[in-house]
Image 1 (cartoon, rainbow, N blue to C red):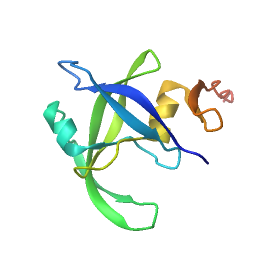
Image 2: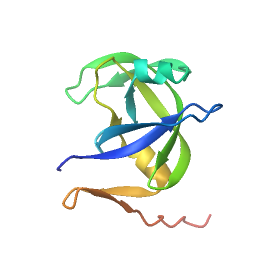
Image 3: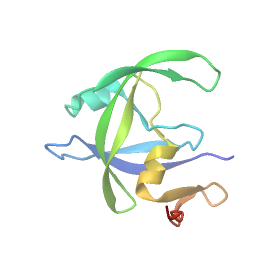
Image 4: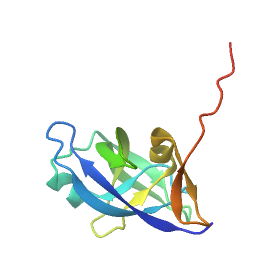
Length: 121
């Protein structure tokens, strides 16, 4: 699958002072990944420390939390992983699902994802 970048904005929950960032759309990544120093500069605090598996199978411990995100004219709270300083921001599958968007790698854009039907119980 081809990759592409999108612009989005992030903020902490209380102040909602949004900062624009460019992130690579990575549907192979579960969660958004944003450098910890940027999140800390917005006073976004980690909620816990977890073990994550990288694409090469290596396991590392990183903090996670929540961030307020604006994307495609929508604003939502999404889980976020505190990446090491200097890491490139990634927009993962969970954030795309929360926003109801899917990646169109051919045209290098995000497109609305029709909601999946819920099976009646």
